[in-house]
Amino acid sequence: MLKRTSIMMFLISFILFTGTAGIMGATNGLLQSDPSEVKMLAQPLDDMDPLLEEAIEDHVMPGAVVLIAKDGKVVKHDAYGYAARYTDRNFTEMDDPVEMSEDTIFDLASISKLFTATAVMQLWDQGAFELDDPVADYIPEFAANGKEEVTIRQLLTHTSGFRPGTTQPLHQIDGDREERLDFVLNETLQNPPGEHYLYSDVDFITLGILIERLSGLQQDEFIEQFITEPLNMTDTMYNPPAELQHRIAATEVIPWLDRGLVWGEVHDPSAWALDGVAGHAGVFGTAEDLFVFSQMMLQEGTYNWAEILSEEAVELISTNWNEDIPGARSSGLGWELNQSWYMDRLAKSNTLGHTGYTGTSIVVSPNNNTIAMLLTNRVHPTAETVSTNPTRQLVAEKTGAAISAWSAASMKDYVEVLEARDAFAHESAAHALKLHLTAVHQYELQHDAEKINRHMESLQALLEYQLVQELITEAAYDDLMMDAAYLIDSWQ
Image (cartoon, helix red, strand yellow):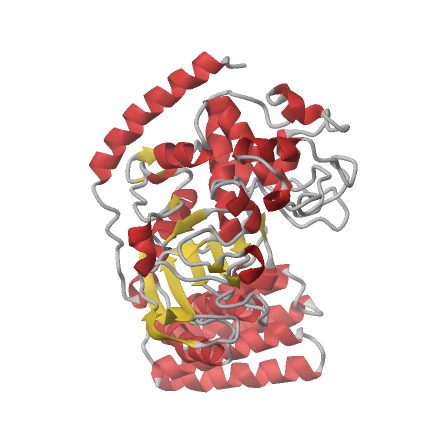
């Protein structure tokens, strides 16, 4: 186990190495690509546009930025609606509303937890602790109120036993940031540790304290020195300076805390009470920077010569640690896994992702080497809006369709995915579809559009039959019919 001095030596050497890596990387320079270059169909991606515009018209959110990437290349990066539009909770229009742009900076809300988890695992990489060590080994006062056995892994997987938030709002606690963090450390548990899953901000506020105790740096300083600076994520930060407000998406009007329109400050009230720097929220960033962060995960911890995490740490992050807990959400270390409610067609056991209360979401699919990101300011001017989850699903669904509708061979691969999800009543139903698609692919190789379309129409008829005979689930039927329509259209 490392002593404090050993950890500080690691930090110094890490700065020297990653500083050099940042120079070598120069700029991130997003590689833009036509979807066809990475075997994606453009039409499903284009079809997101009117659907997102409709969601904006329906006041689901005032604006959004979408970024889709595959094989390290960005195939879609578009902005919609407004970054700042309203002056009050009654949707009174600004005299000069600010349009959303591709480089708009968002309050990422709980996506901040991914940066906390990454920082924790950087310290793990250096031997600062073991995942199953009690937190109290490194923060002695944490042991108060029966928390002696809570482990670092349990904090990372939301199985510590903490309730979702603190027993009293942190902004009501007298004192400065340190005194409010002391209040967090004295919190009680709602459940016995390791027995239940309950998503908790307290878990990650505590992990932020752990980072600060082990490194001697405040969390924002640690994140900057060991994550955002090495990755050249120049638009990712806590507490953005006032001069950047014109690029930041506004969030909620909060009169009950005498905050007015929150624009350029963290929205989350607990993070706000902790001077904008906390383990659960507080990070601001752009879609481009989040692409870099996500691509680092796809590349097993390394990007542009900067090694942020070891391959072993990435493997641990991507492992579902909650399989043995009844009813628990699949969770790696910080990242969520296989959440179809926002990952939709991209959801698999190793698909990583997270959402944020302000209307942000990110999906990282190792199987498809794909990133699908939706950043919105849905809490502007009020959080009392309809759910953004259907829009999150839409982005993942159309991304999945762009991959699987690329060719009959891609569709066949997706049938196998659906088969693994028990979407067919009998193996013969999936087998019939795969045989049909194998034949269509032969016509694709011959560029015989007439036969492709005729056989794909036969496939649609087969899908109709399977649905009537209850041989296929309705969801799988919808996906494959959509893919078939896209594929037919691409050859017409």
